[in-house]
Length: 397
Ligand code: SF4
Image (tube, rainbow, N blue to C red; front, side):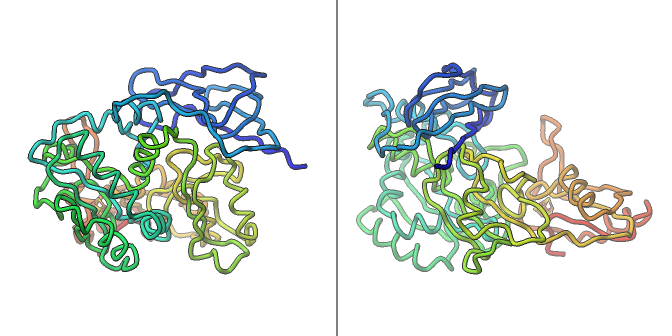
């Protein structure tokens, strides 16, 4: 018998970590509310039947029972859809982690809601696979969002090459006069909220401005799936859809294999093993997509925000001195330094893409996401600081 131990993160959202509501030794059920937000945040529920083994500042560790019935503890009954979404702990599943009930507390009369189906990180496939198989559920979710916010229109933003998903969605919304499909350009970062507002509504948001300024709310496809389940099934967020890819032994999985409804807290290694295991040698375990993913370990747990589990190629080794150019929409300085270290290279100079400007809070933001400039001037600056080669996150130059 294999014992499965899950680490359920206390911080799976924007905001402070949740406070545990359970104790070590306590038996918990699937769906049970086990940690509550302190201020901005979202509720956390157990994804399995089991016993709490340990509680740390970061995790509630649960030893799963051998027997895992399908049934789960439902969220409290309510007629209020926004409350159901709050009770279920729905957050931005595309990686942002913003609590959905806070985002949807808006009056969008005359405005619109947008389902973000860009899935713009290369290699990830789970959002599109969901749309191919459950287009009606997504359309119901868009209607719920419109009802909650009083929005006049609903849009599904998707790239035109996802033909199967487009046909399925087209059929699902053929009798919905206020819901339509809108095309996104096939580039990175097409899923950035400011890019979506620019492409769909023709409004150029300033760095730091939210879609609300354009009278719109945007939610990732999987967040909408979780909203529908909260409203229709009273189901809390206890699972995550993920794509495993890269250097795994199963050849069919190297370009991306989708696992739907993975219990939150499961170690990522379990899903790598289901793809035949790591194909040695490899570089790192990347948690997330190639552009914005973070370095992780094999025992890293699946969270509400994990979309990709990528086993990378070994890092090329580089003896030349490196200059790095940070991009707001992909890797920034700390990640580029981390990659350089794995390449055995020394970073001697750092610059930001020239489109990165400070917003009113002093945070560097991209001025025009996806409309990348020539970087020649920045490269010359790096060269003058001793750089012999360049490490860059995202640029078409
Ligand atoms: S313009 Fe610069 S910061 Fe913006 S996406 Fe392109 S490379 Fe990144």
